[in-house]
Image: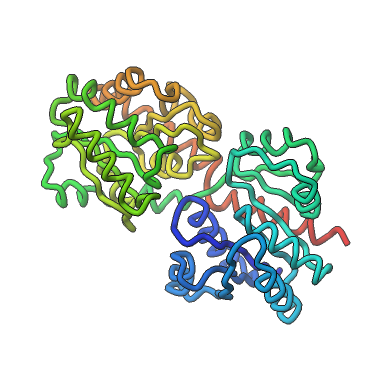
Length: 367
């Protein structure tokens, strides 16, 4: 098969990790894969570093008809069979390309929990898709609630990860970097540093945590959605409530598996979470997780079996479970073993790729 993936993101988040891993595996399965992306984007650089095919377009937004024209022309010239778009603004470009080159099949992957817009043109655009993939049942439900997507075109495929990469990562790197002994608990939150991810909730939980774990350190990993200003707000918050000495901001990192391996607990306090790829990564690394009951997280974590679920914004319960799994080593080991088994059975890259290829074949079989 010949597939063009379309992603106009400039930064690097869960959606881009998904595209990168999926394309890597499709290439290994001997399919022809090209990524259409912006020339100065992070995903462009990562694809080029891995010698993966890239087609650069300006991709200025949903109304960028010049990019849509070039996209259609490229697909026709290179016998592309499927355009697989991953961002809302990119759906429009795939839709426009299909009008110019009707033979092409278009697939949208929905990575967000936000409701679909109800305008006439949004309905037309979504109905034009040959298939819409939701990254969780929570996202699928939001699409269903829009009321205008044909159920037969809707499929849920969970995001997958390279389980072995996280399971077999080496430990000790982060503790050495930070000069922390094995006796000091490290609690981590990894992901885009933004208001909806709940880093502020984690910081507000620290006074309760250090009552039970006085030496604990909280590491916050990820880039700032406000180019540094939101991280400064979080630093100000930590200073204001007297816990600045317990918080370490690591910024964006490329060694997440190794960082995960040194965590005693992983926390994600999101207000909403379409899937929660980073939760799966932590579980694969054998880190017990405490995450909020938000969207896709409910489909990943079984409370008390392979992790803990807490109400959104509930600082007291979040703190309680963090302290519980750090102090109770036997519980931590049991939770971690169960977590690895769950990830292997549901969230491996192999399962994700197999199901995606099935969708491609089904779409191409309908003339």
